[in-house]
Amino acid sequence: MADPVSWKVVERGWDVVDSAGSEVGAIDDVLGDPEADIFDGLAVTEGLLKPTRYIPSEQVGEIVEGTVHLTIDAEAFSHLSET
Image (cartoon, rainbow, N blue to C red; front, top):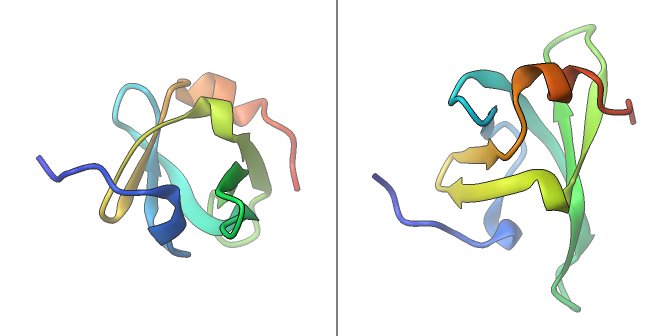
């Protein structure tokens, strides 16, 4: 398994998976202040013509190169607010 990386290296297009390891979307934007090292959360898109959802930093688990793991399941993800 890949080593964890900082939220500061997350890029648009990285995969986002739920707590069970199922893909729920892709990174659209990383929200925060890198200079102050304040991570606010992520904007995650479910695909073309689908809503972009806001993931608070508290619901982000391990981050490895190319993939962000959430601490919530797909059902909880589907109820997050749209950006």
